[in-house]
Image 1 (cartoon, rainbow, N blue to C red):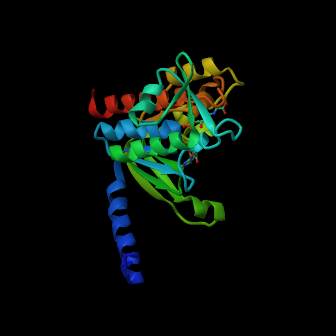
Image 2 (cartoon, rainbow, N blue to C red; image 1 turned 60 degrees about the horizontal axis):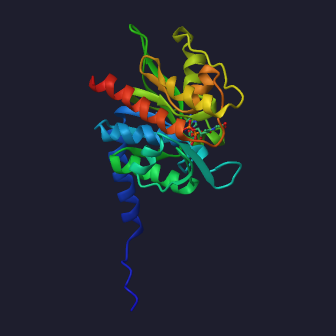
Amino acid sequence: MIEKIREVEEEVITKAIIRKTMEDWINLAETDVVVVGAGPSGLTAARFLAKAGLKTVVFERRLSFGGGIGGGGMQFHKVVIESPADRILREIGCRLEPIEEGLFITDATEMMAKLACGAIDAGAKIILGVSVEDLIYREFPLRIVGVVIQWSSVMMAGLHVDPLAVKAKAVIDCTGHDAEVIAVASRKIPELGVTIKGEKSMWASRGEDLVVRNTREIVPGLFAAGMAVAAIDKTPRMGPIFGGMLLSGEKVAQLVIEKIKGK
Ligand code: 48H
């Protein structure tokens, strides 16, 4: 027997979407943490932040999450993870196959889906199709207090539409190779004294180690994680091995939690 599908008036759909979206947006206009970019570092950071009870929103330019994970290694659908980052994936039920002692491989699609699920289930909001195009700052002391956002589609169309702003106690640049948010700080708030040196050529193990080690608060209120850190510091790229991105996301979350909650 075929179940009868419920009938619905079109305006009911429209009103529900608008009402519930606006409730969310009013709530997120002032938040604890804005994570920019839903790649491996951003999704991991969002999960740990939300788990610690911080109101966390991830703005992602594209209409999908996962960042560079989906491309695997040269579009082969697998990525490699080294210990101790396997712990982070096990916690969210991502299946790993050992390839050598302390080295694992997984499907790119499984990893991106489960990282996103992990962040959402912990309570983070992921908003797709929104780009962070600028920062909000204050003086005395000089600090970052939020982000300026725009629909990615508006930016792609080249339309002149004024953006909106979201206040946050901490902003995390998880935008990958271009360190886009830090680049804005460097270009538009020169008194911060931030420079982006650009990443170095490949040396996988060293790149992984330095990305995690150098994950930090770059200027008051603005943190960096993942590949953005390598771009700021001119440390080596690492290719399709992702443990460093996950551990960097976990570390930045710890730093932000310590700053906001004082522990
Ligand atoms: C909103 C934005 C904006 C913006 C960008 O590139 P990602 O995957 O970043 P990471 O650092 O989490 O991971 C890096 C990894 O994927 C990688 O590229 C590696 C390991 N490379 C090694 C190598 O040798 O090449 O994700 C960044 C996300 C993307 O989804 C962007 O669309 C998004 O950020 N994004 N979102 N506002 N201004 N800029």
